[in-house]
Length: 372
Image (cartoon, rainbow, N blue to C red; front, side, top):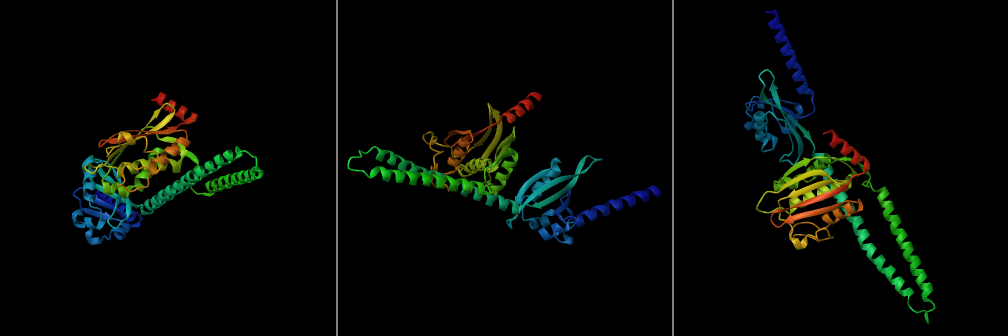
C-alpha cells in the first residue's frame, strides 16, 4: 500500500510540475490527445487564440476556428499518424505569422503517440522586417545601378567630344585649347565628385556589401519567408536539395540573387499548373553552383541572350521593371562568377549561379569529400 501511495504522490507531483510549466510559459502551447481532444493550453495561447477553460475536453473540430488556420487539424493528424515532427510557418486569417512546431507526445513503454504538443512562435515582426529589408536592398541596388548606368554614358560621350575637339585645326581658333582645357578640368572634377559620392554612400549605407561566411540554407529560409505571401497565393511548391552550404559572399548580394530567381520562378509560372521550384547546390571546378529550376512558361530561344539586359521582360503583363536578372548578372560578374540558363517554352527553366570559392573553401570541401 505504501508503494502505491508513493507512486500516486509522485504522479501528483509530476502533474503539478506540468501544470506549473503550462501556467508560467509565455509561449502559446497546446496539448491535443490522439483523439484530437484539446487537453491543455498555456495562458498565452488562451490570449492569442481566445480560448476558454470550457474548451478543454472538446474535440478540436469545435474550436479549430479559434486558430484561424484551416489545415491545423490535418497537420496534427499527420504528426499523430507518422510520429514525425512538423515545423512550418503559417499565416492566420488575422494576417499574423507563426512558426508552428507540432511534436508527437510519445508513450515510450508502448512506443506509440498519444497526441501532440503544439508550439506557436510569433514571427510577424520578422516577416515584416525581412520584406522591408528586401525592399530597401532592391531600391538601393536599383539606385546605384541607375547612377552608374545613366552617368557613365554621358561622361563617355563628353570624353569623346573633348578628344575630337583636340583634333580640330587650330588656325583661327586660338582660344580652343584654353576652352578645351577648361572642359577637361571640369570633366575630371565631375568624375571625382561622382566617385566620392558613390564611395561615401557605400561606406555610410547600412547595407554595405561585406563578405562573410554564409549558410545557404539560412539564406533560402529568409528568402522563403520574404516571399511567403507570393508562395501562398500561387500554392508554389519549393523543394531544396542543399549539398555544400557554406560560402564566403556578401549577405545582401546572395539574398538578392536567390530572391530574384525564386521570385521570377513564381511570377512566370504557367497558368495551368502549380509552380514547382527545385533548388540545389553542388561543387563544379572552383565554384559553388546553385541551381534553381522551375516548371514555368519557359523562355523562347530568341530571348535567352536578352533576359539579362536591363529592363528586358519576358512577359509584359507580369508586374516588374525588368532589372532583376540584370542585377543578378552584374553582381555575379563583379564577383568573378556567372549565371547560365537552360529553358524550353511551356516546360520551364533552369538557372545556374556560379559563385567562386576561395582557396580555403576549396581545401575544406576537398577534405570533406576525402573523408566521406
